[in-house]
Length: 117
Length: 117
Image 1 (tube, rainbow over the protein chains, first blue to last red):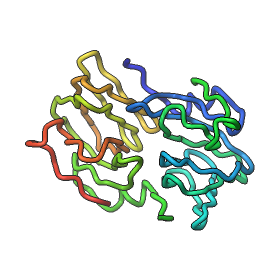
Image 2: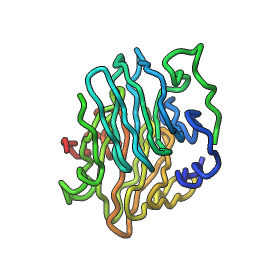
Image 3: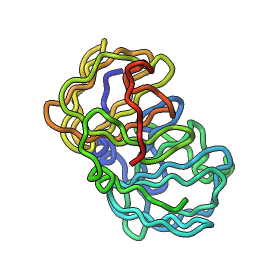
Image 4: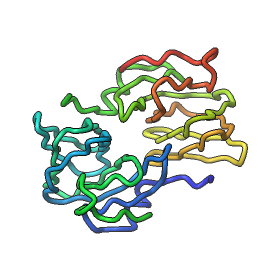
């Protein structure tokens, strides 16, 4: 119960891309760390907003309404139902928050399995 | 809709302590920034976990089960129902996430009103 989450220490434990790792839980939401590089797929989540906080690097989030560019210490919440595609031109580390069980691609068929870190 | 949240820029806009400012929303949760210094009150939230991420400074969270000390880039989620008291010996900036309307002291009678930043 009294274990804190050191984000840098957790990030040092993995190196794969686009594979979110669960670091903690908040009211049934997964608190996740992920490293990304390159383009993800266009997708949306009909039932949940999508929380992105950049820890290192730079993330572009293309959306159907325009693009957002996030650097370290910047966050953006993609509203539910909005089509979006994350892109990272350099390796980028993110803190994500999503309800437990949310498929990262918006589709259980193509989603990666989330593991603990 | 396409407005990102730069945490440092938002933090530069206020200087009061123990007065959370709402910077964004995630699925009905307030994403808040707060500056703290000194001791808060012992309290608990029966219906929600309490998310703390330290951005600058150092936060001690005393709990009924023991204490946690968080530096920058470290987070802890106080489980719902657990008595706790945040203490900061130096001015400390935090990112907090709580369901909208959650009283910061656990009690609507003593809670501060949350404003936007």
